[in-house]
Length: 319
Image 1 (cartoon, one colour):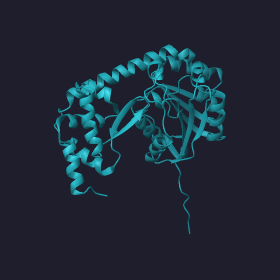
Image 2: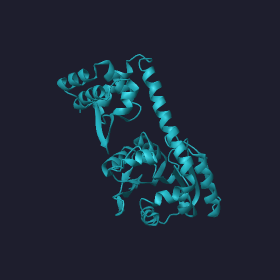
Image 3: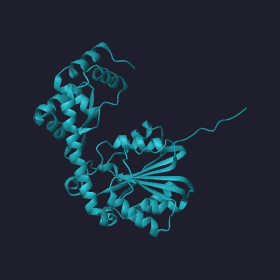
Image 4: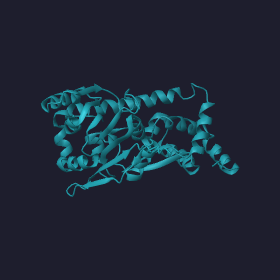
């Protein structure tokens, strides 16, 4: 469906200002908070918010609250994205160089904080996770959702201590675990060895660019990882890319909550995810979602959700 003349003019007016073009260029890379954009643009938060409101009203960008913070991303509407891409394509290549250098600084600060956190907590990682929801309850529900196997290849993205590998490795011909923390990988190696698993490969790798072949795993797991990421939709897209025909992707993470202290205390960037958000990303990845499984924790008020999706291949009927 095309934009009307009035809609096109409104969208162009909303984009037709230097700061707003800078914002669109930044959001083309990842979703950002008002605070982060204020830092990158070197403008006050109220001023940045006014620009964001105009573009949100025009349908160019989307606003979504996350606890006490608000994030923005480019619109998912195909025609709006087409217009944005066209506008950004005709900008001079060096138009946003300074902004993107500052964006790289923001990313670096985030990464350093996250790496420092994971290196410090690695020895207590499994204990910390169990403070939120009983791991035994999560794992029982997870095994039921995943099924009995066997699996040709299991890929665990953000493997941490390697618990998912030890849980499903015996059902797989081979398994791969990726993580950015060398300390975590060392712990995972120890745990995998203790479990008697010899067909497991542990790699230092990036969830956004795994460098693994497409359609190479019949079970891909993303366990308690997305809430740390700057662009969780991109991570889901990469995970979905790895799923083979008739294979399955399983995501385990928190449902939306309002525990703001987890941002500073545990480096959580997002305070959980709604079913519709995750399912939308799964559909975008060419997968068919199943009904999510919610596991509430009465004491803390946190809920862990298991989302599963398959890459279904229709049976070809011959005459």
